[in-house]
Length: 63
Image (cartoon, one colour):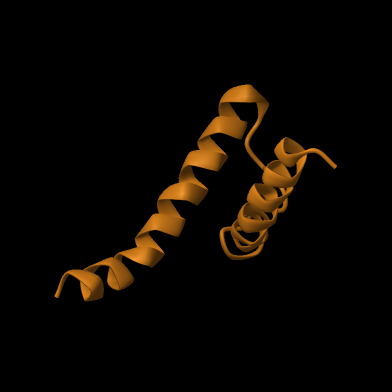
């Protein structure tokens, strides 16, 4: 494998656990909102929820 492909595979393996948590914890397994706008809204809501869950950890790091 080339170095570029190896780098992409490492990056993907770092991101995949986050995607799995979003699908399970933020209920992204099934999108119930219609159309392209619904897809975007669902993704944004999941990211906002994910960040809200991380706020306590960020505040601990600041203190």
